[in-house]
Amino acid sequence: MSYIQEVIEQTELKNPGQPQFMQTVKEVLTSLKPAVEQNEAKLRKNVILERMVEPDRQIIFRVPWVDDKGVYHVNRGYRIQFNNAIGPYKGGLRFQKDVNLDTMKFLAFEQTFKNSLTSLPMGGGKGGSDFDPTGKSDDEIMRFCQSFMSELYRHIGPNMDVPAGDMGVGGREIGYLFGWYKKIVGDYENGVLTGKGLSYGGSLIRPEATGFGATYFLEEVLKHQGEHLEGKTFALSGFGNVAWGASKKISELGGKVITLSGPDGYIYDPDGVSGEKVDYLLEMRASNRNRVQDYADKYGVKFVTGKKPWGNVKADVYMPCARQNEILLEDAEAMVKLGVPILNEVSNMPTTNEAIAYLQSHGVLVAPSKAVNAGGVATSGLEMSQNSERLAWSATEVDSKLKGIMAGIHNQICGALDAYGLDYNLVAGANLAGFKKVADAMLAQGLY
Image (cartoon, rainbow, N blue to C red):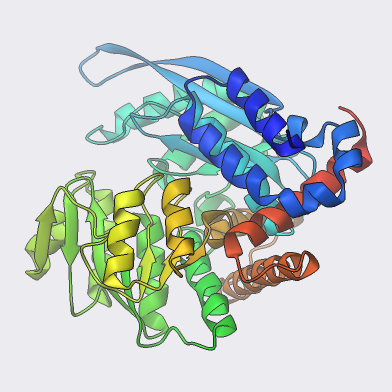
């Protein structure tokens, strides 16, 4: 049995009932075969793979809070500090009703490789709660955030662990979390959270960063293929910050976004999501209604209930911007039948392993999320730099740095593929490039 297969089987035994975590472990480790075969003795001796799939610590805590009617509630909070070999733990907080340990672990594991690709000194972590902010009042959300931070503050800090926002955690929630952290610790540790408001240490471009970065990465992919973004059509899922940022940048660069989606279904806009339509996405998110049908009602476009656009709408590029595992094998089969040539994964692990394998075997170019959506954490890293140096870069400066980071990620992937004599397989290249930096740091620091 190979070293990789041994570690996969050991990890599966230790993590029963965690399919999402095991899916990403299998996907990552399997693609590391060229690197492991070249360095197997050293990796085995130092148990690098075994340590890499085991979180440094898993923190679980209760979060009691009171709603506006005086009713008491208890939710569960998480922070998974996966690997800090190259820097403080870094990764978002997610407030969604289906958040669980499995979700947090797979996201934190992915974050380790994603952060490595940015070339910024950030380790991997993730956290959140099974609290659903949909329909909650501002006061309820504030009280929940304060209770959540009353436990989380013990485990974070500018040089220890720096959370950010994620699904269900935007500028409002980050503000409440930061305010309570300040009160508890009695110090203005500006670098303890990223995604902050501009008035208290936030960075320009941060809300748009994941969508902008995904578009910049795609530009590099298309350039490598001898193509251009201008004139291409895009099917997106979601309508939150990520889809908003992607729609904004795609429109600026001459592309056309023709779909968005929500929990209720998807819209098809053949004229494209641009101009005031892009701005309206912010209003939709702020409404807390979580309905994409509002877009269809306002602009008189087609709305399809209870479905995603995958396999139902022909486009030059598919860009899932919503959540994990939204593209299944049957969706991949429908994509191939439609002739969709590129899948640019923006959300975390939106495609199952089986679907990715099917797409790649049928000639679809898959750009993996750990590379594509690194723009968000990269800009969080830039916010950390600004905080530590008491700087405030202009939007143009931040945007330029972000574009350079995304181009650098693509270059790292190509370099890793060249080093192992592999074809243009972005999934394998991203894992190989991310792995090298983390493994080298772990080897240099000894057994810890």
